Image 1 (tube, rainbow, N blue to C red):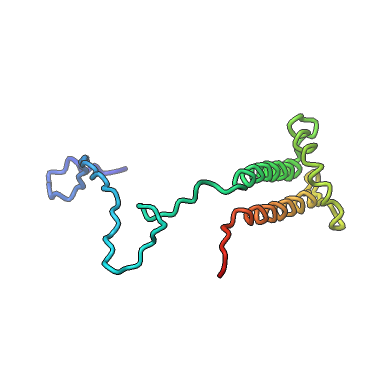
Image 2: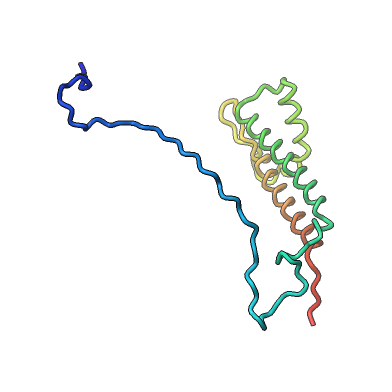
Length: 161
């Protein structure tokens, strides 16, 4: 049983009072950045634009190649991850989606089979495809190597005198 104190004759102002107040204030408009004035005799970069940032002229020549390769390797990594998950959860291989994922990823997993003495670890019906895990790591390393090579072409050429 609970005791209702709202009707007590004693009014000691100890009850919490909730009050909601909303105040709308205008947001100040941000002023554009003004570069500080240069003192006389200081060094100034005469090649820079007025805003102080160098104009790179857009993305480098291999930028779009890196984007496409990143997309392809990302899709491959997701498909191999799905393969590992589907085999762990004992998915029905008669299902067309499961069959699609397994058949598309098999050519990418096949080169990594036989690296270890066992290709899968079984626990009842579930199987951990070790070859697919090794393939995921292997394709990640190949992707990182390709990205490093493609970044070499975008580096600025500087002559050393």
